Length: 94
Image 1 (cartoon, one colour):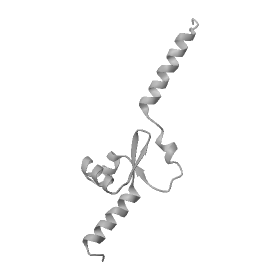
Image 2 (tube, one colour):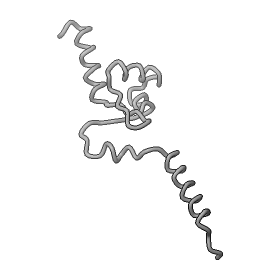
Image 3 (cartoon, helix red, strand yellow):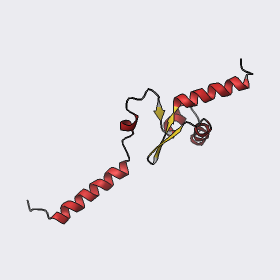
């Protein structure tokens, strides 16, 4: 097996860095040990059986968006509180 030059090794390291960036950050590392439930927009839309963009609008209205680097996670507890509050307001505070 021929020896690789320093340039080849540096190019390989650069390619590996780019692959890691494309995969994005490890969100589990940021959310580890949290008691709240966090999901992506797509997962939240599936959980609530909603259209994707309707769920995005709901999450923004509930201020449940949390930005982690270039990704957004949604705090489901904040969504639940918002929905309960809206339900109470609609029913006259019953």
